[in-house]
Length: 296
Image (cartoon, rainbow, N blue to C red; front, side, top):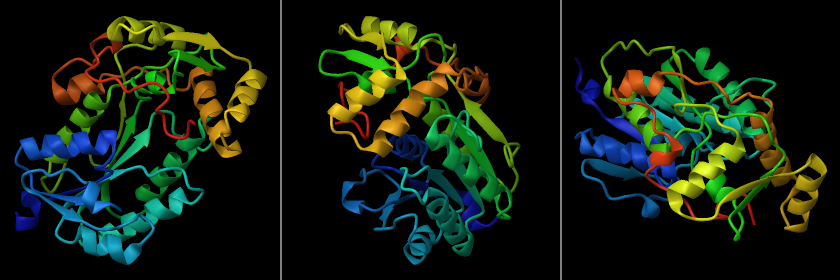
């Protein structure tokens, strides 16, 4: 086995809630890391980790330099830019050019070319690109975050959106990070997860009313869910000053739940971590209201 296979893992998105957790877990296991991103000064200080960048996904030369010496790339999906497939593809091609052996791509449960949730369409396109890129890879489809409804609440702890009976198997950041870490640690020349699509979900599918009620009980805060019509949802967000793209994206998030596209429940967390998936009642972290990306 070459030195490179002894474990240098490049992790992107380390200034965010998921990437930071993945990097911390790998550091705890003594895995050498390259922390890759646009803002090295904002990256965590972790043992065995070197900061690389600035390197944006769409900057091929910067990404190639940042990834030199890595054997595995954990590619956390970038933000919706209108060119996300191109940015992801550039990052993957830079990884191949830098000698990276495999890519672990963080996608979304429900990813498909016709997904209701707009973010899930770009993820599907990236999955297709990876399938033909000629590099070992694993797709890790993350469920909708348990924390997102709490972050979407307004200052009165009200979560409003066009979904009533649809269900979603919300997953915690911790469970998702634990699964990705387990796959990253399986770093031999072959892995049972090569070419696999792993759907990471919570233990049960809940309506938003059920989920928000449990968030209220878990936090001791008066969260509540109020359903809206599509027209009400649009008008309220427009009055708040959200852009048309932000409105479309968030309404599609609710509608994906309403259509049952995120209701799948799997055993991936248990199978890969040895522990059951975490329920909303036992989640370890809650964001403040009105902190979801793209909200006013």
